[in-house]
Each structure stands twice: as C-alpha cells, then as structure tokens.
Image (cartoon, rainbow, N blue to C red):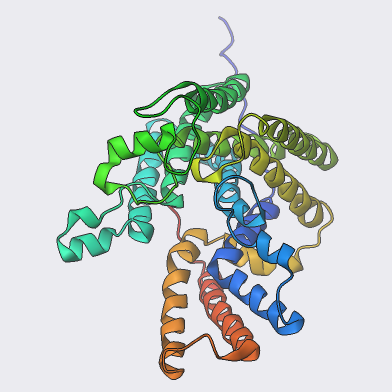
Length: 380
C-alpha cells in the first residue's frame, strides 16, 4: 500500500503587527481632522505670521506642481494598498478566503462609495430635498479609494508577484497614453488644461449633471488611483518579506528613490497635476510615501521608539470614523464659537485662535481615544 500523501504545509503565522503603518495612517489623517488648523494657529501665535514658503506648502497648488499639502490624498490611497497584503493573508489564515473574500471586497467598495457620497456628494441633502440634481456621484477621496482598492484587490488575488508589477506599470502607462494621445471634441490630443483634458471630457460625458463642477477628474483618473494603491501593495509586500528588518528598510528606500527619479524625469513631458492624477504625480507622491513609511518603520518598528507615535495610532486605527466624524465635530465647535463671538471669528486674535484650534482637535482626538480604549474600531 502506498503511504498517504502528506498534508500541505500550514501557512506561516503573521508577524507581529507593524505599528508604523497605523501610525503613518494616523499622521496623514491628523492633518485633515483639525491638526493643520492647530499647527498653523500655534505657529502664527509664536511667529506672528507664517513664512511664505511654509504657507505655500500648506495649500494645494492651483494646477501644475506639487507641494506637501498635496500628499494627503495620495498617501491615504498608498496606505490602503500597504494594508492589503496583511488583510488578505489574515483572512486566508482564518479560513475566510475563497468566495467570501470577494463578497468582502464588493461590500467594502459599496460602503466606501456611499460614504463618499455622504461626505462630499450631497447624498443626504439630495434625499432630504428630493432633488437628485444635487447629487455628486463620484467626487470624493473615499470613492477613489474604493476604485483603487477594487482593482488592486482583484490583481493581488489573481496574479503572481510579477503580474502585479506589470499591472502597475500598465496602469501608469495606459493612463499616460490616454492623456497625451487621445483627442476629444474641440481639442487636439495632449491638452491638459483645468477644464480641457480628456479625463474631464469623459467625466462630463458620463457623469453629466452629477459631476461636482471642480477641476478634479475621477473616471479615467481611476487608473491612477489603482496605480497608487498598487504601489502601496508593493510596500506591504516588502514589509512581509522574510528578510531582516534592515533589508526591508533598504527596499523601501530603494523604491522611494526609484519612484522619485522616474516621476521627476517623467514630469518633463507629463506634468505633476494632482487634479487629474497624472502618472508622473502618482510616482512622485509614491516616492515620498515610501520614504515616510521607511522613516516610520525605522523609528517605530526597528528602533522601538513607539510612545511618540501613540497619538497618531489612535487616529490611524479608526481612520474612517475620523474622516467622517471630525468635520462634523469641528463645524459644530466653530458654529458654537461663532455664536459666542457674534458671528465674527476673524478678529479673535492669535491667542484665542490657537486655544480654540487646540481644544477643537483635543475634542476630536478624545473621541477617537475613547473608541480606542473601548476597542470600538470602525471597519469596512
């Protein structure tokens, strides 16, 4: 009799949670949940006025170019990608793979899409007013995450590592070719103006009255969103490598320098334009994202300096709750202060402005900390 076949080897257990990913996500969210207002108010209090170079870095560029404030959305998408290899591996280990994982993906995409319409698409207002023309169907960061996450998830589940790399390149190259080679009504190919580019024409044609009216584009730009998430996937796979931490760090830094170099060179023919998510901008933002992840990984996970990052982790572990809840809380606090000041908030002075901004962020963070202590994590 032949011996029974040996059982397949069990998958190796997951390594200890990489805290730097949660901390970096929280660092990103910090700036859009009241942190920027607090930092600006405190700097204005001590400096009198912000230096022009710093003020420039804290506002979006009108069209071409890239500054620090433009990193917020790309970094958010990048970190979503970083988490995908860990999330999928955990589900496989817990026996929740197969068809269940695809149902999870669809469910997450739908929830993110609806939350995006609530956050910035006037979904609730259009329902209340019974006016569907108020609705913006595709106009929010959460929906760009949904689009990028959908593509990246299917790629990761169905293609080997080399296929994932090729897909990332194809996404970047195909979007670039569409932007520079395809003409559209009234314009030659390659026109990249705020309200005249192929991505805008596609949005106006398909979304029509449900478009948000801004220079941001979404449908064709989804190719770029998916590429950004895929680059994050590659960073997560680097962190999962069965190699020493120093080797992982070098890989992250190498990817950072490679993305920055290629993105910078590409920008001479395809400018950095975040509004339409150009492929050169994708690589440039990904390069800085890799560098930030490398820094957080080195300091937190390699050197063990974790206490300083705890405030960011509290935010990062409840990012969706922070994204949806913080604007509501901040508006309520601002309305309350406006009533106390007779509706004029411009003349309250640097001291009161700094106090209000600090207390406002403290309220937001305290709510997230309570959720953290109670282990209430909003997961999609």
